[in-house]
Structures are given as structure tokens and as C-alpha cells.
Image (cartoon, rainbow, N blue to C red; front, side, top):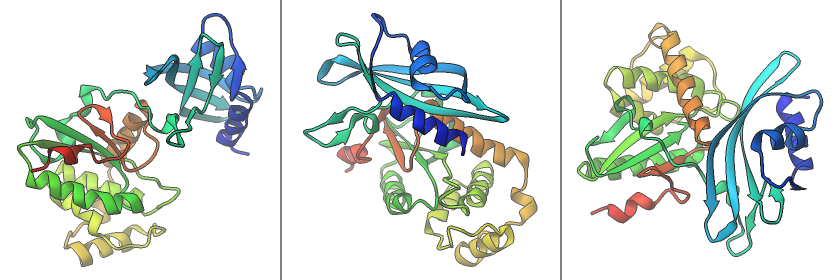
Length: 275
């Protein structure tokens, strides 16, 4: 049984509790949330604490946990809702009016450090509105969303700056591991437009043969790369750093979009500013 599966079991047991007079996140994680004796909590890091809109007695704590079990180590992001007045904690808070779990709606604000020129793929860095997207080039939802977003930003460079972060979901789309290294190579060489063209690629998401993947890219998009071009530690490291930054603000799925520093649940906020 994997470390994460063991953790999932412990999350269920901690869905509701009566807490101490003053909520202590570190104590909550170590003594209530992670109850499996085989899992050691190495570190708890608070990312953000946000009030829950319209619910003054509730706060959402967002944090990462560094966990270990036997020879395995993992860092995972979590969120807990605290009602200190009623001494309640829950891992899920559902709005019955919208049927949405608020853990899927609330995210930390985005630090300005994410507006890194290296990640600018379209628009103007000096534009008044900034869009940041975390995406996988084989995620079906991303394939349906990214072309329209790119087209809209390209048509309005005076209004938008679009920043892109790789978030390959390799367990679902193994081919994305190679594709993101290809995209990173292209971005590094000033070819962001070509990198974004990979959203036009038609390929088997389960393909892992690097030579076949590169041959498919060449035949469909005219991008001619060799394995030695993309098989460099810096490209793999860059993708890993993107994933790490995503986790630092609780991003777990794709496409995840931020508009002007705020999480955009519906991914449509920028449309209000189109011509």
C-alpha cells in the first residue's frame, strides 16, 4: 500500500473534530489528521489562512505536509476548515446553494514571483492584466481551453500578459513527460509560439517512446528535435520546479488559472476585458 493511500485513510478519520481553545495547525496535523503510526510528519508549513466568504466563523487553512514512511518521502498539500467559535474542523465544506465543495474554490493569492519573464508565452509583460495558467499539453480540458486562451491574448496584447507553467499529469498522460521537456526546450530558445503549438498535436497519451514522440511532433508540426536536444538535466529540472511552484499555492489539477493574482474557478474572468 502506498504512502499516499495510507494518508488518504487518515484524512477520512479526521473529517470532523472538537478542538482545543486555540487552533494549532502543527498539532492538528501531527495528532489528529495523520493517525497512521507508520507515517511520520517531518514538517508542516502553512501556506495561507483565508476567511471563508460569507461565513465569518470559518477560516480555511492551506498547508503542505512533509511525510515519510519507511524509505519513502512525499510532500502533499492539504486544506482544513476551522470554526474556532464552535471548536470544529472539517476537511470538506460544501455550499448547499451551489453544491460546491469550497476546498475546490478557495486558493491562496498568487505571489508576484510567478510573473517571471521566462514563463511569458503571449501578450505584454507591461499589460494591466496578468493571466497565469498551469497546464498539461495532453489534458483533455487543457486541449479544449488553451487554444482559445492563446488566441484571445494574442488578439489583445495591450491588455493581457499570459504566463505558462508546466504541470504534466504523467500517471494519466505518460507522453506529457517528453512533451513538457520539448516545450521547455523551445521556450528556453525563445520559441514560445512553437511550444504552445503542441496543443495542436494529435498523439497517443500513453506513448513513452521518445523517438516516436519526436517523430510525431516533426511530422505534424514541423519541429525537428533530436533526443539529445531535450535530454538535458536543466529541462527536466525546470519542469519539476514548475510543479513545485504549483504545489506551493495548492494547485493540483489542470488547467488551473489565476487572473490578476486571484484563483479563477471558472477560467473566464479575463473575458470581461476582451474587446
